Length: 305
Image (tube, rainbow, N blue to C red; front, side):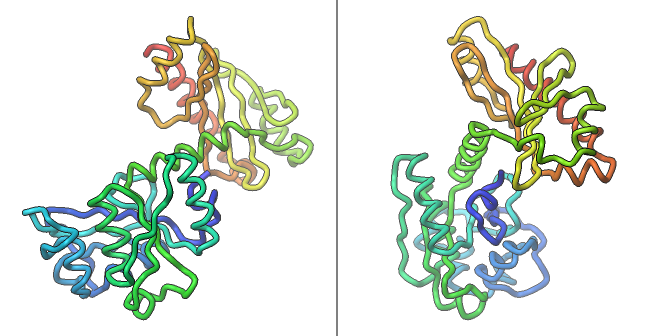
């Protein structure tokens, strides 16, 4: 499950990458807060010192040296685009206070510290939520500034949170682990008959809340989540000792979620696809076989670490 879906946020997270080299800019003059707002709706925007028309943002983002930009090398361009897992400097979230409350609670439990809100009502999205976060390496909540609300269309009830990329990535991983720990799929009786028949034709049997079968010698489980029809894949690897299992988890660098239990390591992944829709479009078998091959290969790689 994505961060956006987990916290029920209406807009996409926004990735901000600050560059020290020139990149072809978008052919439109914009404020940074406008670019963020539009990126949250799906656009990719590149800003430079020519098309960025807010003087506060020019200083905050390092096009001109200032309090948040002490590097001798000035910023040449800033990429603002929907976040889809790519590496960036800062991830921005547009949210309402009730969503921020839940995010803050999750953050506090994960990192053992409070989510802070340091703001002055000036240079908000560019300075408080982006430049400060990049410089200090800590997330921050901004209650915006007059420019953001007047020119960029932010609503009265909206605020912006900026996260360092690595912090946001760790929160995403924690969300995946929390969801996988509570994998319950859906009762098989809830599934349309053609969906059950499709799995059975591929050699899977049904249990109370999942399908199970074998792929390339490995036992695999397939879950379908009740609310979204998303696909969950699961297999496990047995090690000779708990110490070996722990070392393998520490060495692992892949994209799958690992959970250790004694000398076993569970390998899981949740795919944001609609299983029922894919089955009825005739594309599911190819998709599932491809993903099963990947998770089995990943399990074997883990075993060799």
